[in-house]
Length: 343
Image 1 (tube, rainbow, N blue to C red):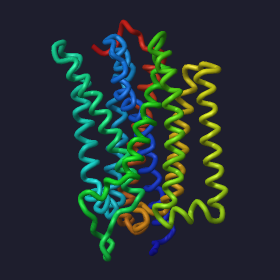
Image 2 (image 1 turned 135 degrees about the vertical axis):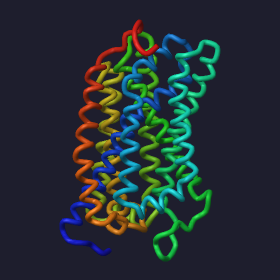
Image 3 (image 1 turned 30 degrees about the vertical axis):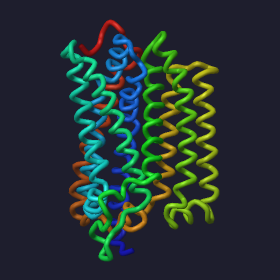
């Protein structure tokens, strides 16, 4: 694996971290409003649906900023990885983007019509579901590996390589996890009957999330030799044990916060911590590969001068995005007023 000098190594690692950070922030922020969209299907009353939408109306479109940052950063900082990953995942990524667009249109249009409101509600549910499943399927397809030609610069697989039992399992796991985030978000933002129904649903969604974390975690090491050696040799065994115990501990805290202490805020933050821990485990599995287990971040990196130029822009923009995101959440903190909101 050819490496440049120390500065170039640092730049490559920094860019890998920035892209991973952008993807993580997108997952935890847009994840809860995608989960909320799927939970729309089990809430039939118009008033409750309006409250659910009002809880995310001030922040939902800003959450998707991080998806643009992650995808754009991948193209700019790791163009080879972008050129290999995109052809392999055209179908799920295209489905995801179309679903997000359709969902955004449905979000706006359902407030503008009475006659077609139920149609736009269905579109909102469908867009949220397809986007969630597509994100999980794309992740599963990336983890299981991408066929690359002998030169290491061209995708050599087929159109349907992304569709496997493992990728579908990861898709369902992500969708259930997003619904957990959505349910705990609504516990934090609503009151009375809607909050209590979401508290009950969060219990079952929490069980499902933990179960699928276990299934995917046990399945992943057997996909690639590199994963197996990473987790079941040397220090990896201790790391695997620590991550498993940490997930179980967080799950216990989640269930306690939901039904023993009956907190409104802690379940959401504990759910975020579970997602963050899984993301860290994913990073441990993949590093230093960006296309498992074919291309490392160093092999896929853009030239050093390009990385420096882009890092200057990222150093300016990312703090601004973080600041306005934090400000938006702070301004719209607290419970949703049923009599006010997005109309």
